[in-house]
Length: 210
Image (cartoon, rainbow, N blue to C red; front, side, top):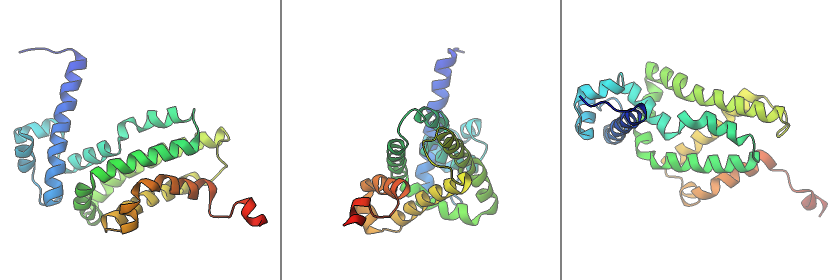
């Protein structure tokens, strides 16, 4: 039996995980979470059903894996640490734009699974704990660091993070609902959100003077 260096083994494992996740995304998008089966996912991935369980414990594990990949959650911690060296507004626009593009690509899958996540208690609790809360914790650490560096003023960090998360989720839902301004001007959103967050809606001093 051939042996591989750890780096190659890691790449092979990652490739197989992504192969399975791609199949799960396709099946979830077509059938929803509850009607999808691991057998169908295995057939779509071109692997045995047993192979799936070498990488994921169950369908809920697949769903969390998909959302984690979609949000690039595994690299978010390092991304936020590196961002402390740059301009906070520029980083917000770049990250918001990138994440919006990622979630736009996964819109069909999100549209199929999010309603089922909301109505299934155990799945909802796991989704919140392993995905939503994990992102919130990283963003809280980032904001607290920015406050200590005096890059932004002191705020209620947990509530600020949740306001940002809810804005993001709300925009995705409006897009799924077919909101025309969002669909036609999607690329303008990061700048609009940055203006709301960093500048507010008060008029500029020169406008007040007039």
